[in-house]
Image 1 (spheres, protein in one colour):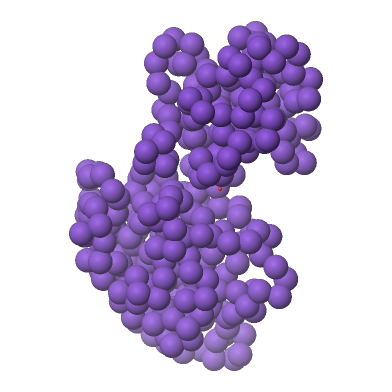
Image 2 (cartoon, rainbow, N blue to C red):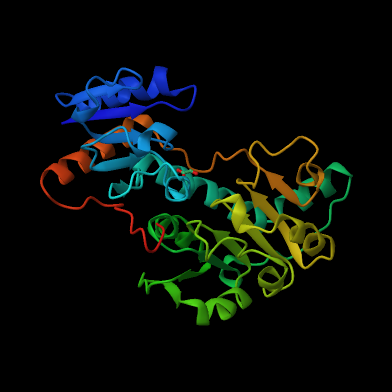
Length: 310
Ligand code: GLV
């Protein structure tokens, strides 16, 4: 049994290779293109699949994704049939998502952008703030990452709700399940946090109709995938005042092109897909644990259900 790493990003060789080498310890670890005998390779670790992956590895059993979102693997024509896929559930990445979501929920809740602009313009208005208990934060996609944000936001007193396809019971969080509850979920959400996996069903789910169901002045945080949002629908909703602001970490095209209207819009905050990055030290240990689980004949956390698409 050998584990092959397929580098993709510039930090892979200096950062990921040593982290994986250390975590995988005694396992036979190889780095593309030094693969040795292709018949030895039973597991691949990486960010993508490549054209050779479909037919080169006769004994490949599993691909371990370094990404939490696996739509690139699932939609690739190069994905080798019959090979299991495991998405990354990394404590380091989860921590990043918690911080990102908390940062923008609080920024929108306290209307920081407006008051900062007012203060810079010499305005010093006094106003009674909206309490956190009057503000509902709704997680669109309430799996591992959404649930991890709950203990961070709960102490402020926000009302919390989560929408997911399968029922989730989390103390203190109102649960909405399935398409029939989607519209009522949106109708009561003041700060919408999209953390959905990207599937054919969820693509374009943030559009003029659905965002129009949010209460007037609501905010959007998209830390999932750019293809969840119909980009052309967002600016009219912001300009009409229906939406109060949007924090976007993901885009249909990344990097977001320099001239894209999102960059210049005063109510849009663009961040460069940094909300939740897999951290080598913690992520490499997860890869090790997943491999051990698989060698023990069991399914690791994050095993992808191909029918569901995550
Ligand atoms: C980041 O976007 C990931 O999927 O891990």
